[in-house]
Length: 202
Image 1: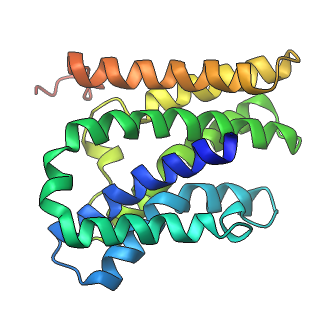
Image 2: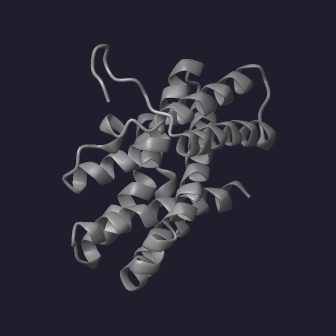
């Protein structure tokens, strides 16, 4: 179940990467690279930090899913772009799932709750940052001001806290993922923004 949910998150993130390739007028190879980096980059960085073989290189699904997303966007990108509101909801779900699973894995490998929380956030947002850097953009995490990393941080912190108190398994992962998902959806709908430095207006 966890792997199926993880692959669903990979698929959604891969769609956003491939769509960035379309906006940048990249060819199918460039689209595939952005799709793969967006979908798998955060998890690969997490596993390298943990000094384990990345999960993306242990299952064929982690290769095929970004390829499938690239093919879909290559042929039907106008239709995919049209349903972006729904994709953003799925993206929020992927954010919640990735931050929870990333934090859980970090805790299982002996990291402190604080470091596991930071690694959970890295898992959730790292792929998007790699996508933006490769496509020549300032990472949206740094200037968009939409609350994206903050929900991941809150969800990761909850996951680390639950794990530290011996509450593990799918109920803890689901609770952390739902919290991050709910905060991200609320931020999108209510247009919550991170504050600028004092004295700077919108």
